[in-house]
Image (cartoon, rainbow, N blue to C red):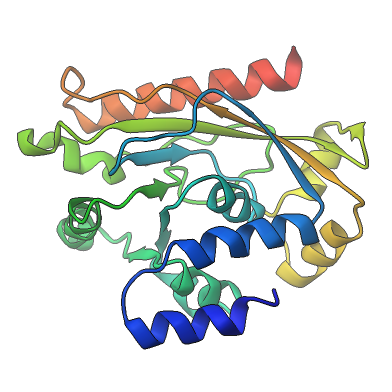
Length: 238
């Protein structure tokens, strides 16, 4: 949190994305929240890459932001949220309008970002879950792959699993209380999270793939969902 004013000044002064400051900012936040991350698989090296992840909490941003130099896609409403909206803007977040008539604009925003050789994280569930399941993916975010010239953009699926708090395995109810979803209020949830001495998370990273053989956006979305869902179930119930 202490780096926030400095990050604001830097970004507004140079008027272009800064990945180094957010990267270390998220690492600091990870320490503040007591988050310990265990990764499985190889962190991406290709740029740009479209990173596809499940979503259960605002902590997901800290976790992924501390692992990758990347930006995020978020619904337009997030830009107006107190605190979270400011943090999202500092991360050079791509804000999208989820209305049907905005799909073309949404597609252009994502492509423009990737064309600048920048990694981008999307949460295709469109909202956050309780961490015990992966909600169905909205295929509209994969619409860019229905154009042939975008087939060379690699996709990398990532599964975030909240496993332990205070060094103890948590059950479904405890995980649901830890994550931020449904109509939960932000501040009470954050206070509860900060009370934890430690939060242990598994991040499962699949090898990237090119979508040439899966041109239909619904098939690509389902393929990504199946990978992430498999990893979540395997981690939780092994």
